[in-house]
Length: 124
Image (cartoon, rainbow, N blue to C red; front, side):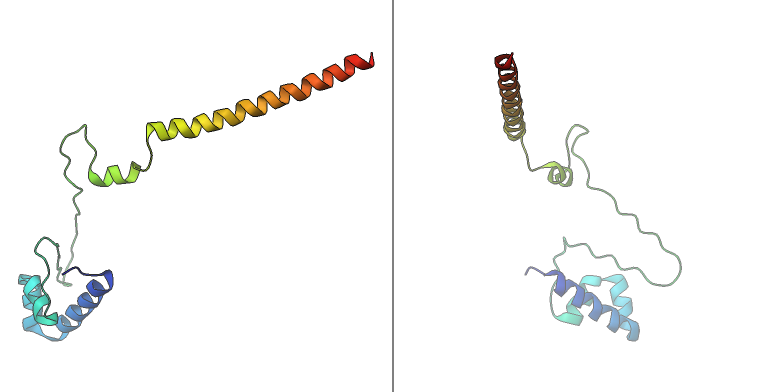
């Protein structure tokens, strides 16, 4: 079953509320959050979905590790997604179009200047 963001938030709220008033459930949350979620909601959470439970007592620090890279020369999937969306040919097409517009504008400017110069010569 796929979980929506809303279902995840609702489940977290339900688990937190129950853990705040039920010591046995709180202990289960700390030892096996997947079993606790199933007990509270009847729904199973896929084991590859990571859930970290931190007891609110004392001081804590969470360290989130980035994705492991396969090689120093390769980008991670996240890095690829952040830079994806274009290609060299797409850039060439765009800048080629911009270049063509600039050339056309320059050509028109020269034509206008030539006409103005010809008028001036005709008046002499």
